View 1 (cartoon, helix red, strand yellow):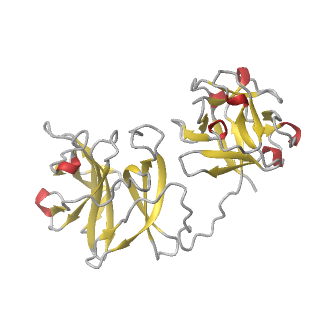
View 2: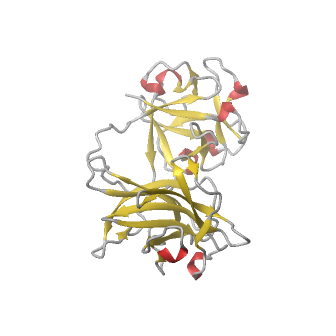
View 3: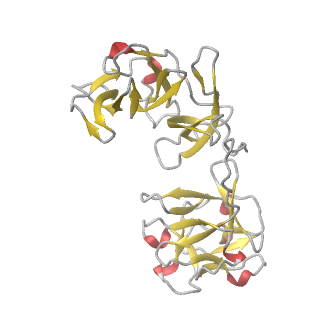
Length: 331
């Protein structure tokens, strides 16, 4: 939603009269009602860099600064590594008129091959709690072949303003870079999580808190024990290791097997793919599947049992509740 001149407008992306996917706008009578069903195209993918893969303008996001109104948008096809951000500025008096918008001729935020960041797009903005910083949030891939899939990760970084009053988003930071939090943020960042199975409501647990390599990982009624607490440590390559708080050992697929039913256990950190996981959100958004980087298979409660002590193993993704986990912050 765009707010300017005391009026509200819905901005989005669509196809109008056979156009390529373009940015469109319509007036609103209040924050949830359109004043007109007619949408006007205010930007189409006419520049070469907006046509990477498929000509697309989408995901408009308003940005306001010192009385000026900008719209950032994503351009090109998300399946390519060249998905990127462009920018419009409202330079005329009528937001419903295409002539009132001026497009910057070059991208404002794009891939960084040196940093291993590809296809940054679909952004948003927020201000730090104390109002002193501006931040951009966006998704991107860590591989040039990542495409539009759910391997994209959400990232955020500060941005600044140029002397001419336009935003300077800089270069996408390398995944895994440690950044200070937004200025004035007082909320504590969780240091560990309980992993709660969606089907059983029970926690991922190292059996008896055993510290030995090979100790079994199973489900058990959540009790707040440290053997049910896991640190999610980013490894900087779109994967993480899950470190048990009680034992200091990591979640590991037995013998690096790729077979359905291979046991999940704990082991000392060996820095191999069998110990790396990707936490991929499911369609509900509240749960993740824990995907092993080596096998591509997910953490699964055997036979969808709800009993204490049931083994947790790896299995091909079946999209059932036994394979979905909620990360619950722990103290």
